[in-house]
Length: 43
Length: 175
Image (cartoon, rainbow over all chains, first blue to last red; front, side, top):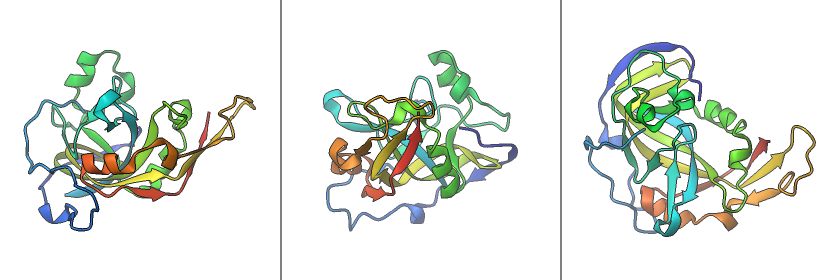
């Protein structure tokens, strides 16, 4: 997956408003963790 | 938070059900829920280890971050070069695209981002996969359409990742 030239490094805040609401999801959604959640999951 | 666009493979992990896994990383990274954290925050230093890491140790310790394109068009273009791994043939991985919210340390590139955190916002399953052969092969899977509705459990995928899975345009893959 080629992303091209690096432009800059950013520090981006988590924004809860951009997380979708699940009222309209017909089935039980998976619980969404409230980040940051430290894990050792690889990328 | 920044929005990014990317692909995964949806695959059934034995009795545990449907999961998403990375398409470029070797070995693949399995997304077990909507939120993924890179083990090490990405750095500006260019890295292409998604393709070049030859062993698990390198892959796990890399500073690549979680990849996403900056717009949907670019992600869809990338979907045309999957190749034979993503034919959707029964038992294979099935390509799924979507939107992720990115935050934390983020390295911005011309065409996308490498991020420390990613949260799945949207999942779109191509309605079907039409397989073409670039060399005129006549294998049974060539020129066939593999419908996602037959091969995948949308509801199970949606429950795991906390989104309503959408069905999108079919895609064509050249093998």
